Amino acid sequence: MLDRLRLKIENGGAIKLTDAKAVFEEAAGHAVCDKLVYRALQEHGWEWHGSWKPPESSIPKRVLEGS
Image (cartoon, rainbow, N blue to C red; front, side):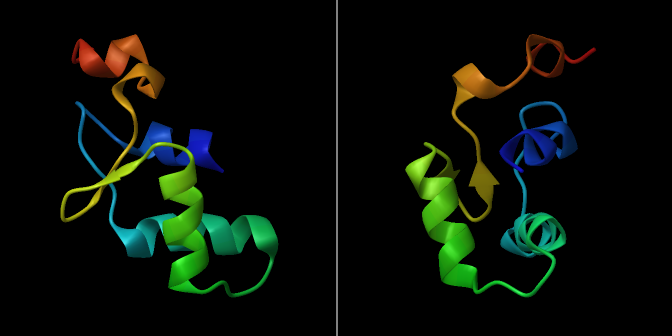
């Protein structure tokens, strides 16, 4: 799921909680609460800055380079 979220991020951007939640719900096959998504992202090093950003080390180099 987290890899799918990383692919949605372009040029070092971020992802909204609603977008992350949709990916989690699709994978689970049912609705999930916001808190579950928040905790899962936080546990994997993602940071909240008005939207979610993954740890820089997990962003593909092609995205960081802008290609």
